[in-house]
Image (cartoon, rainbow, N blue to C red; front, side, top):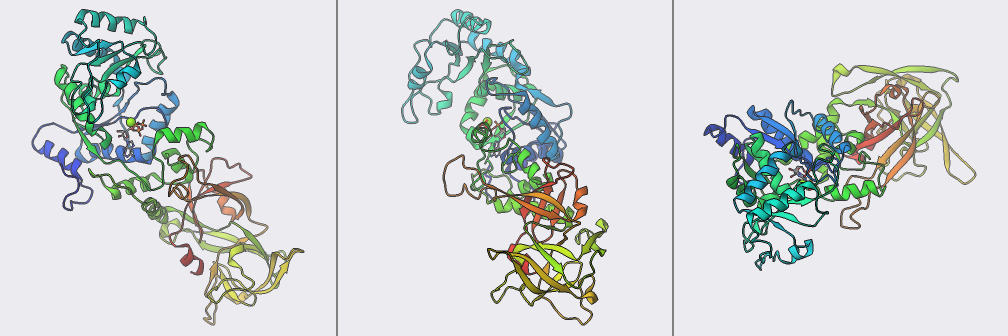
Length: 552
Ligand code: ATP
Ligand code: MG
């Protein structure tokens, strides 16, 4: 069970090895896994690791994977989260078919198993306050102390438990605890709580219950009821495994699942904690769970990240037993890999600088041919308008350029992609000295961007025709994980810059969520805030090497 041994076959890991060995040894007819989210928030990219592992195993080994909502805490759980979780799992490319379950489906069975433990003298009602219970729990180095209620008669325990269920007592008045061992080295075995009183309606069971099982009491038994063979969870649950096994050993469960732990996904500088993400949403630090700055699946989707990229990323990082932290650059790499193959290329200017081509006929507009995706010839080409007035990127011009600046500067010739070679003749400034316009000339013999005499220009710029372009808002998010690196407030959020951009006209037809590459700038995706007259685009990720792209 060592997750860090010799190289394996690609896509293999210690969990898949265990599943394979169990199937080979005919310990199970098929593998049955589950993804067990608590519906108390949206899924984040850490959950994607668990989803890809559990559903991936079902696909690869011809087994099945259940989606099970761990809905044992009605105070924090909502239908909105259940719906969002389903949407996100489907979006990632997985399905559960008929195998949709809820821990709450088993409340009656769990309750009767709890009574069974009481009857066997293995559980008791404790009337201590929460504080007293905590104080008596001991520490890692000191054993706990037995509760004064630990030796209650079975009949009294049963009576009190039934009255708890009937709603006779207020929240927190008493709990049901397993009677295991208050001096166990593993604190999870020091008489853990099985049931607590919670007068709160539940999204599925309504007001049928006012006592709810703990995670530990619900989880393994739910696995056993569903015939789960491999119950995969993150390392924090390693210390819970003896308790998981204790319940299964002491109850007449219909099957015997096994729990295996793997390292959770950590990304440097990115908060993957539902508690913190919930805070960001509640306190309006972000626009919602799908804010493109959020590491949630909904946020990544809105930013334009394709699900294939998340699956590719998860595959690359692999599954191991030792905790580690990965760099967000790995995720960006997977995003670019996928988008490079499928994103249409388009031209957009984020910070427009106007150019007037003095020798281009007034009123003339020509249509130039532009390739849709050099990586995919089947994507074909489109036509883009060219005219006397165009926009280029402000940062592609310098009045007094340093030596290695090959883009536009007075007297210098550059190529406009798919169009012509142009030369800057004059710089127009406003009263405060800012450059507001360039007067240039174009060489009519260079249509398509090639000079018949073979003369070379070092820079190729993107551009749009001024009057024909679409004004749009483009949102540029500080790199995910950027600001939070190196500490600071847990809840600090990366900023967003909104620019007034100009787009080539064909970008009017891009659907919300569709990815495009703005040439030389990066990958972008149309945001749902767009209106027919005003598109909004989000930058999904920049190009690999910005410096290189600028002189290319
Ligand atoms: P919390 O415990 O605060 O509710 P959680 O992220 O553990 O948050 P769950 O809904 O319990 O939320 O998680 C569902 C499943 O996803 C669990 O099996 C959990 O182990 C797994 N999971 C959660 N975070 C990660 C992560 N960063 N990497 C891999 N798996 C994760
Ligand atoms: Mg959890």
